[in-house]
Image 1 (tube, protein in one colour):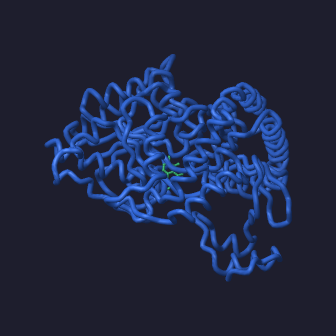
Image 2 (cartoon, helix red, strand yellow):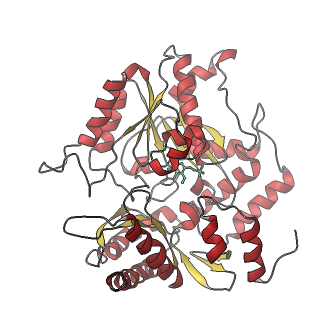
Image 3 (tube, rainbow, N blue to C red):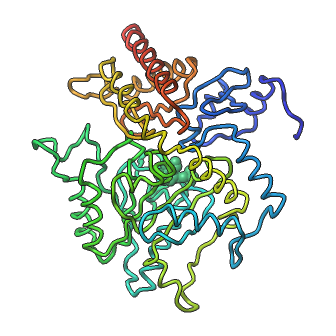
Length: 462
Ligand SMILES: Cc1ncc(COP(=O)(O)O)c(C=O)c1O
């Protein structure tokens, strides 16, 4: 089926018949169809009718340099012509080597060695396997467990899903790995830990230590967390959290993995979120923004200390591989993508516009249903509550109606793509492309203001 389909309704019918979307309700697609995006340009995408939308989610936290970049397309085409594929299994290729060196130069401290994957979940799972094999190599074979936070999303393959803490997407596949332990996240709006105290005492971090002691420190290989957790809604940790987590890991000889699949490559105004929060991880997992989605790529940046045992002797091979991990075309695209970020100072753009984004988000606070606004860099959410005074949330039916029947269509029709997410408490998630400036950020504020104001009236008259 190589001929283009020019009639949007034919395309829709074909999609309804054959396409199986990810985390997509197929019966809703049969009834209602699905939005089909045709092309993109900068901060915007266009549907098959030519209607323009501000891409307020960067595809899926991915298209950091914006859409329609000819230099990224050229990098892919040039590399395909030169060497379309070769594995990194006992071979190297130029884009893979250059990208590994580039990432090592961008990553903090002694994170100097890169293991490539195809995507983010594989990166997380690779980090876990690497941690387990590292500890076996240094004579601590009982260290197999991994600690992550409730509701955090780290991928969907069975290993990564064990680390993921979202009950709804885990339950159909349980039992998962029992070695994957969960600890509280850092919801400052709904903290159930320090809520009775006058100020945050970092009890959420202390619970990590209590969990380690309960499980047995000698059984824990690694702690994996996002700098700012996505699920639950851009959960920015309280001051001091990361310092405490690093200290706890060091105290018990546990590896700290910063899952930067979303937070890396400028999302928080830095190459990596750990720089913003000033902690040094032992591994960084990345994907998405490394290529801005123009080609699939992920990986793990590993410290020299961790790689050291693998540099000694024949038996120390990391027993893990993926045919397409570090695909040469993807690596060439990543190099071009990083070049664009540097040339256009996109990290600086995020930092310069943060105050405007703060102001836009704060202006939403007094609107109906807005319980909290939070986040940093170009990663923000609005948390929705039924009762602002008590923080009472909606019933499942109300939430479904509010997010799916009311807010999502209203926002989309107004020309903005963002994400309504109720895998934890309901939030509207914003993660615009890093090329956005004041005009686009204020547009986001305007659309959300209209949508929430309309929703309040519609909720009463429902
Ligand atoms: C923090 C984090 N880790 C891992 C993943 C999984 O990445 P992928 O979908 O590329 O497997 C995601 C995906 O959104 C993510 O947000």
